[in-house]
Structure formats: C-alpha cells, structure tokens
Image 1 (cartoon, rainbow, N blue to C red):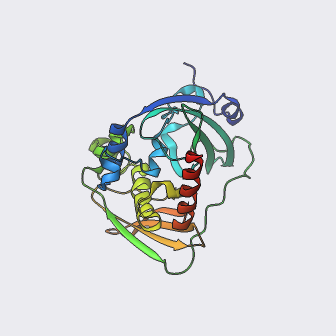
Image 2 (image 1 turned 90 degrees about the horizontal axis):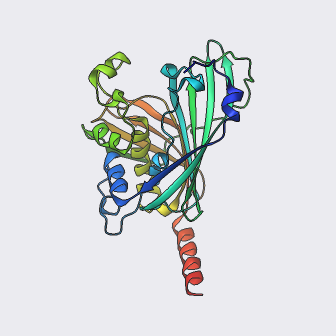
Image 3 (image 1 turned 180 degrees about the vertical axis):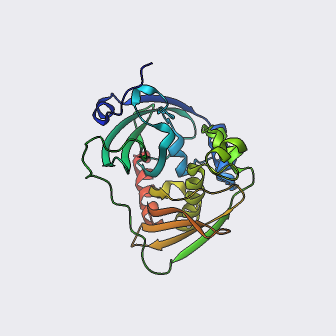
Length: 299
C-alpha cells in the first residue's frame, strides 16, 4: 500500500469507523482485575457491575495508525488525554456498537507536532446511547501542515491549595500482564527489549490502566463504589507508571457533584495523571433517580 502524506482534512472526512463488541461477565471481571480491583461487585458474577472506566475499552476501534493510508507518523504518536462521559449504566453483557470520528486537528508547527482529537460514540444493541469517549493524540512528527493552531481544548486547572482528599492504591507487579488481556497487546508493557528500545528500564503500565486505577480511587471516595454515580472523568497523561508502584490520587472538591484531581507515583513523587476533572451524582441525587425509576416501572 502506498504511504500517504499526512492530510488532516482527509482524516476528518473519513466515514466514522464502526466497531462491534460482545460484552460478557468474564470480560468485565478481567478488566476489573487488570486495574487492581478486588471488591466483589466488580469481580464476582453474582451482582456484577462494570467499573466506569471500562468504557474506555468498550467497542474500541484499536490502533489503526499503522495503516499507511492514514499518513500518521505512528512511531512518534502519544496518547495525551482521555475524556469519558457516561450517559447510561455500563452493561455487563450484550452487544455494543461504536462509531469513531476524527477531528479537529490542531497544527502546533513543524517542530512542535499536531494535536488530533477523536470521538467515539457507544450504543447498546437496543439503541441506548451508553457513552461518549474522546481521546487526544499528540502527533509529534506531523506538525507544520499549514493548519490552524487554534482550537486546542484547555485542560482543567488544578487548584492551588491543599487537596481535600487523598487516596493511595497499589499496583501489582503483574498489573500490566493482567491489563493487556483486555485488548492492549503493545509489547512495551510486557517485553523488556521493547521497553528498553523506547527508553524505559523495564516495561511500563498501560496509561489506560493508570486511568482505571485512578478511576477506582475516585469511585471509592466520591461515590461509595457506586458506578451509577460517576458521570464524567477527564485526565491528561503526564508520565508512565511502573507495575508495582503506588498511585496516590489527590482530589479537590469544586462544588456539588464535581471535583478536580491529579495522581502521582508515591515512590518517585512523580505526577502521572494531571488536569483531572470528574463529575458524579451526590447520594441524595441517586436516591431521587432511583425513586423515579421505581415509580415508572410500577406505573
């Protein structure tokens, strides 16, 4: 296949990528183990619930960037941010369909690269809109194409005060080995040679596994481990985690049902997720919604 030059407008004009996936309890439990969960509602089929951050893996189109037709210098591409919005509870079984579209693309300059946004809309087989997931990719080798330098989304600011809450969660030495079974088979996370060639002393944890560990922390302290209370979670990736390290999440409340957050590796005092923002239902809001649902069901 002929290698195409990077053409952002061609990328934007492509029809959305349709992806189908069957979800079952085994996959739900495997994902939970991959991000370190041991709470029964997430790892036991009796009363099983999906962790909110699992949506980032659901009906995922995969890494399409090695296809020369996209014209992206994939070797210099970094996953910079993930934003998720949940519109309905995540299913633990059934068929899902997603549509992934690209754009906008922000040109930072020939020596600075480009920012590419992609948005995935996920629906259940009954038509329910389950979630919207937006990923931001940093194309270090594809800037300077003459596009606009405007349009980059401003990250959520972290307050300049002490956090209101802190929670530290460990990662296991084999965390990456477990997480990769949810679909991200990049050798960087298992093969020491691949890790060294990328400049790391040993394999690193998947960025989305870090996202999942921090999501568990937010779920525990802000939503009493009730997945139906989490509505949105945005974060920027700033540094890798090595399996076996401890991730501490700092949380700043920003009014009812909203908080900023950042996460660091305790052992190296290194920020690994930054500019975090989460929205959630307060306990009394959940009670009202459940009461309304019960009334509709009995009507």
